[in-house]
Amino acid sequence: MKTMFKDLKRDFILVAVAGFILGLLLLLFPESSGLIICYICAAAVVIFGVMHLVSYFIHKAPEHIFRYDLAQGLIGLALGIYLFMRPELLLGVLPMVLGIVVIVDSVIKLQNSFDLARLGYRFWWISLILSLCTGTLGALMLLNPFATAQVLLMFIGISLISNSLVDFWNVLFLSRRIRQVKKAVDDAVTKAGAVDADGHFVD
Image 1: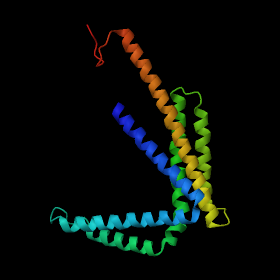
Image 2: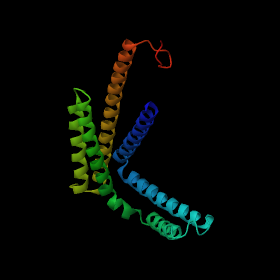
Image 3: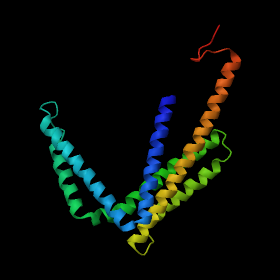
Image 4: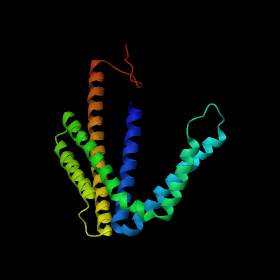
């Protein structure tokens, strides 16, 4: 359980750091960063296609028959190459995709806020307000009330940075609360009876 929580905490922090860096790049270099993201997505689609093509040719029938690796590989490769040639197409839907991601993440953070309240954390309402703010930012990204694409990308950058800061806040105080609960449990076990270094009761 302890190891699982550590792994989950690590992954959560890595995602938050990645979002913060991406948001910072979009804020400082909106035009070039937007294109870089599009090229990265195109590269991912190409890699997806190549992996399916390789899978099709290295596996033998009948074990892998009707898995459509060849079709998926050709479609992925063609789509990825096309996106490399026309990155502006992906750039056009990027705000919508990121807006949906931010909204979904804000809903998850909303539950985290109520979970913090159920754990007895008295400042849970701060996380609630922050999650509502990030959800509003995501909705604005979908509505796109901005005059130029550059301003929109800068706003997306601000939204991602804000979203990452909320992630850091939740991880920080959830970790603190879990440590407090663990300490209370350890103290209760210690009072109930002597334990050795491995946590076993000593007769």
